[in-house]
Image (cartoon, rainbow, N blue to C red):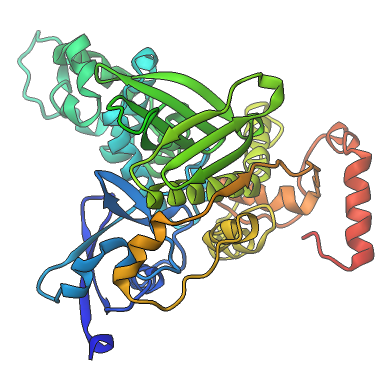
Length: 458
């Protein structure tokens, strides 16, 4: 019977390896996800998602949908001999790698960012690429000084680090091609080791975190791009970039990306799609006309809208945690925070997963259900699914920022201190008294209301 047949799915992951999964012919995305989680040995992917390549563009799967929806008739005619290809890619970008509790997820996130840096076209951020290359070398090679002492140089030969180590890496592995052409390989081989040597003593795990933080400043780095058109039959491409803090809109001109708009989430009033028509309405204070673009298909429009909604929800759920981490890093830099800690990663991971300041993939996956009220797909034949996409009615998503409130509870700052330092803390957090004097009345009201309701703030 058809329901007992199996399909072979090959999942390509960011570190250039692959995972093989065998699923039912009527399987949904969750079945592949569960297999991936088991093979990676992690409980959740946090910021990673499964995607399929459609019209030379990555489309993230709705895990509740059947896989036949994305592979079409080929899925029905397929067999175990021919694999169907899916991709494990970053779906939500973060400002701090400390939010990624699994070291495996953190390494996969780092691996994809490494590739995006090589493809970046941020021509005006040249200095940042040198910093990123130095951090990547420290993460992958370690201390530069470990390579000294066996170069076999003759007496009198120049012994500067940039001379002795200039050939221990390939510029093509750490710099975009345009930067290599602009500066030349010799320039990069001469100067990059100097920056690398300045990171001596930084652990490889810390170098990965530093790379993730620096890459978040790259204009086209932590962004997922979707190709659109201004007119249905126009060939000139518009790129809609989904970023953590908003949406970037660029235009391709002679192979280069020219940014047209840079919207934060608070700048956007609503997104609307009808078929392949996609509209963006900015808030009235910006005095901008409604932006109208066209996607390759109604399926693309629907999934772009879902990604925007999920990404906005992820931003809302993590911004407080990011703020706290930045606050603790600033205090550390100001010498306010000098304790030494003993690591207890198991308890820390449990607290992070259960704390209200963080989000999980399950939180983000329900965003569309709460904002756009998709009707559930009925159990119909796979051949009819593509036709249903073309008949979709107009769907609108309003981008509302929730009212912001602060709950600077000492216990919450304490566990975030553990997150920052990778450690467990027993005892009070040492902070200047002026810090707690600045707690607002609004925060106290929130804490009092939670206490009355019997809600724990730990």
